[in-house]
Amino acid sequence: MPLEVSRRSWGKLRQFINGRWVEAHALGYAQLYDPGVGDVIGEVPLGGKEDVDEAVESAHEAFKNWSQVPVPDRLQYLFRLKWVMEEFKEDFARVNTLNHGKPINDSRGDLRRSIENVEASIAVLLSLSKGEYQREIAKDIDEIMMREPLGVFSIITPYNFPIMIPFWFIPYAVALGNTVVVKVSPVTPIPMTYVMEKIAEVFPPGVVNLVHLDNSVVDYLVSHPLVEGTAFVGTSTIALKLYETSARTGKRYLGGGSAANYAVVMPDANLDKTVETLIHSKYGNAGQRCLAIQNIVIVGNDDFYNKFKNAFIERARRLRVGYGLEESTEMGPMTTEQYRRNVIAKVDKAINDGAKVVLDGRNYKVPDYPRGFYLGPTILEGVTPDMDIVREEIFGPVANLIRAKNLDEVIDWINKGKYHHSAAIFTQSGAWARQFVNNVVVGNVGINIGVAAPVGWFPFGGRKISGLGSHHQQIDVVDFFTDRKIAITRWF
Image (cartoon, rainbow, N blue to C red; front, side, top):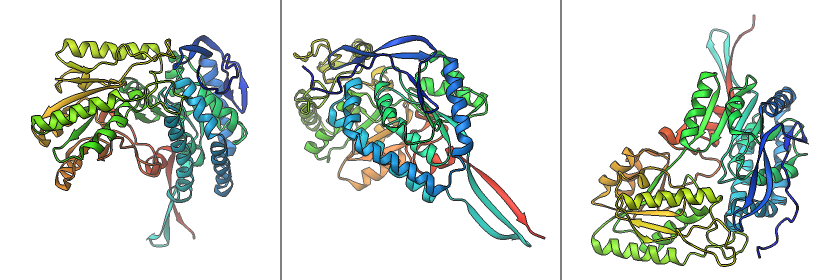
């Protein structure tokens, strides 16, 4: 049996609008699962345009007062938010695992990064959101630049990090004086619903609103006349669609998209540490993250390639796959049965395209949880950069082993690829590392680091269709969530 978590009945979730829990104007309901056991644990409403209107109008009204709250007072709300997040972080982590399936230690890491972004938003408010002043730009004339909040922002987030990704944006937006309407994934909405229950009293009504919507009304939210802009994370296909909607309706837009990341293993790499690092960067979160390493390119002779391959396969075999709330679990299930099937279909196609399976997780079973959505670690070799399994995002626990003649060849593959999110190199050579960092066209680079995730006070985002409109975190979100107003003054 799974370990105990909150035994409450989640039932039908509701919307959190204007500081109250209200019934949705639902176009339908979708079932919610504990993917580790395959049980239904609740239902999520697929809200309609009425829900959008109520949430946005509430946020718009709240903005009138919230934007006028003095900075020292606004800071106290953020300190209170951090305190609540710290107090309930273990509960949040367990509910996160319950609905998503990831190992509890991964969920604890998600909560740590969520709290880190609250802390970083405090620093942003105190330091980076200040304006500028210059005397005597002309005779007796001074010039002032001030940053002003804009109003209501929509925040649309994916299923894979149910709490952490909303907290990439919420604390920064409200710290800078805006209000938000958060639309979370209908696959994993329970964690943020639970968070909202605990932080409901932190902010004045209407400052932070949470809605569950049908996909058919997402465009309506993004283009709503009272919405100033949208922060989105998801697939590049949807990111581009919402970017077009935002541009057409004159809205600001920040869009994080898909990835198919490379790691290159040079012949001087520390083999043991490289293998261990790549195992966790590939199979962490069951591969369901934009920072996951998908394509592992080995540069070296046959002996080096075989040593790496054998060590990687052996360590992947020993991964403890199981229920996420068991402390010993290293990799949990896929979050839905459909996602599991999608990944299997991608592996099947790769085999038809000429790839060879050297570790097959397609029929993986966890004896105590026969109905869970499990997919074991899978490794392919004989793949080439032109195959779909390399070019397209897998978003599952599948690693591609690829051989290359030299580093130049790998950099060329990365730069010609479809996505430009992240890349990593494993080497002890400063020259190779410098060549890699300076020449790969991606947003985030790791040197002997498998998951190149910037901390909250550095910018984070991909390039090209992996990152559209703006980066998030640090000065980028200040520019996104505020506008610069110029005052030129002369006193007679």
